[in-house]
Image (cartoon, rainbow, N blue to C red; front, side, top):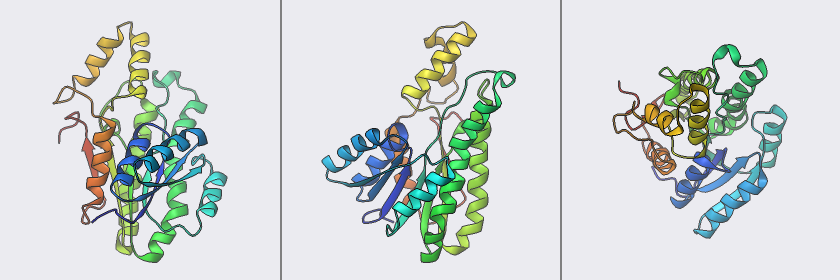
Length: 255
């Protein structure tokens, strides 16, 4: 199945994985709708997409807020969105659970889980009405194995996987495929932040924190944003893939 000529909405598209995924989809011929909280960042990504010959539309919104998602759906009335990539999320605090505040916990779940629920509620009905569509939720291998001092994040990503598998059985019979992709640690600013915080907390160097983390992977490395973007495109090319969670972790998780 080709994505050429289809319209894909990508949340968290202003940087990181969302930026890479949007660029890869556009490069394969999809028209991308870039959603995120900061218009300036989305404009940069849109310029990259159009500069490479692709098609992009910018639609700023904080998808953790019900009113913002309602407004986004209203703004995009008339768009035939057949691909929804729920990528928006935050890393959350790097501290023991007993030191995490209720506000910090709620912030992580609002960004990582409630945003997906709101986007599904807003954009699934048209897919169901047309009898087809694809949704990929970005989860994490952190939702499937211990990760000390990251309880809000790991709990939220496990929730994403549960949302995905259950929703797939709700809407699969109606023609909509729902899957999740679970990257391992992804090279970039977010992981460098986590390594720095872990080093400060544990009294070790940043290099030691990084080595301890990536040493759990069979390949002994992190994955790249571009590898994650390629995986999204590959998943969309498999029409029989439904209710699946795909690990892309350089061997961080083995089953």
